Image 1 (cartoon, rainbow, N blue to C red):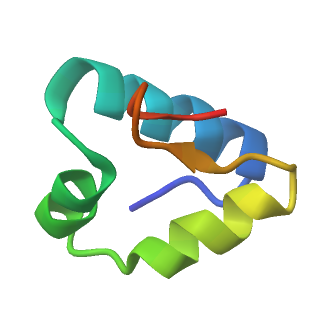
Image 2: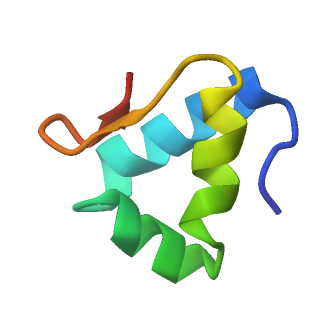
Length: 57
């Protein structure tokens, strides 16, 4: 289960992306989660996915 708090979710997702996944789509597929769910949550704290660095910034 993903964290519900946006700041905790940000930390979790970025750590997972850095350590285990080539890109955000791979991460979402492995966790069986809709990308929009994460994107929408992190947009509430002004973060968006940057594919060049494979992180939400």
